[in-house]
Image (tube, rainbow, N blue to C red; front, top):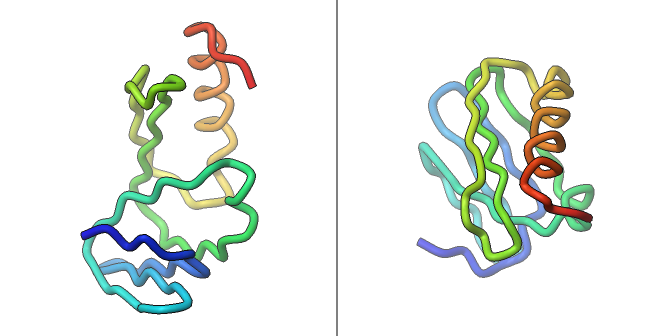
Length: 94
């Protein structure tokens, strides 16, 4: 399913997550969210503790690297630093 709508909030619990847009509210076990970096501050993220995944992609959305960690949302600094190192090593620039 493709939402094709502006996401206003993402809530996550142990069992499911809820994606809330202006038009619809969807409850699911998993979601893939593609967001341009400049828009991420506009989404209200409510993330439960647990496993996280990061994917570094090139400009054509080809996967450069993947990594899974167990961390709370406020403990993701190392994961973000890792993604920057990988992107630089792959020759990707801002």
